[in-house]
Amino acid sequence: MAKSTEYGSTYTLPFEQPIVELQKQITIFEQKPDAAEFAEEIESLKKNRDQLLEKIYRNLSPWDIVRVARHPQRPQTSDYIEMMCRDFCELHGDRHFGDDPAMITGFGRIGPHKVMIIGHQKGKTTQEKITCHFGCAHPEGYRKALLKMKLAEKFGLPIVTFIDTPGAYPGLKAEERGQAAAIAVNLLEMSRLKTPIVCVVIGEGGSGGALGIGVGDRTAMLKYSWYSVISPEGCAAILWKKADEQTNLQAAEALKLTAVDNLANGLIDDVIAEPSTGAHRDPQATAKQMEHWIVDRIRELKRFKPQTLVQKRYERLRNIGEVALAATPTQH
Image 1: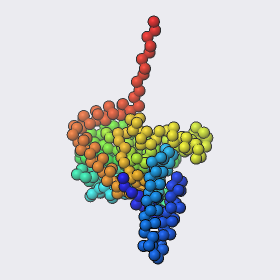
Image 2: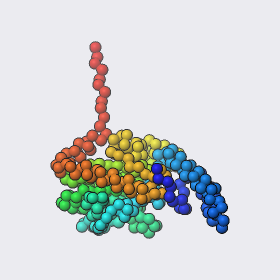
Image 3: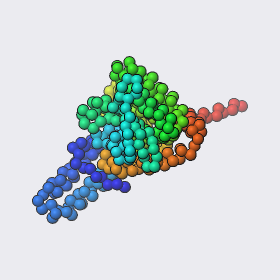
Image 4: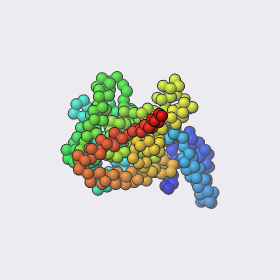
């Protein structure tokens, strides 16, 4: 398992507090003029830090996993494109209203495959986050995505989507421009595109905003991501009329939003491993794991004829949430 590689961040998740003191001690020893004399102590402290952090991450609650998925240094679509893709050429605009920076689209190569890449983008700096609406796409973002999917279908290229959004943008202007309709059209059109589609939830997978680019032949989640009809805070506000630490935790547990829960419920096909303490500590290792999964799934899907692919996708989607009714006892 990959070791943690980044401890210098000023951002600390609440459940990571136990390692803060250890890291302070390590920093003090490393900054001493005679630091070489304390090499053994430094190594011992680092080992204790790593072991403690891995233990914490092995026992995360669903609400803690949501926090990891929202970590400000967690890799985003643009990061994975840079780490995994060659010859990426970004495409802009929906040819209807404008370009939405919350949705990245473009041609690229992942492994041996030429693909169309589509993904949410949250932004890194404060200005980027504001420009990208914190990853909440407008209708033009979903129309832009669909336009590029149609282009991929035209040229017979597989589609790879990276899902990372708390939800579609809820503002008045977005609703006026047809937010719900744009997402609904994407659901319909993605279900019948005659080209392979693979989807990966890389961070947050919130509501219809995630589904707008989430209909595919194979869907996976990174280990510390979440995927649900609503955020824990939104659920808590509806059920308990308040969103605080306790109600958020209860809501996260009830929603079954983790990768493990979604896999058990048949909503996704695979869980992609992350480094033991999160993708934000070793983005390269995470990208490598995800690249292997994408390459393997595309290779598998390319074997099917386009019409067969659509039929199998339809059957897969129809089977989600299927339940069997118990037989009624025969009365004598």
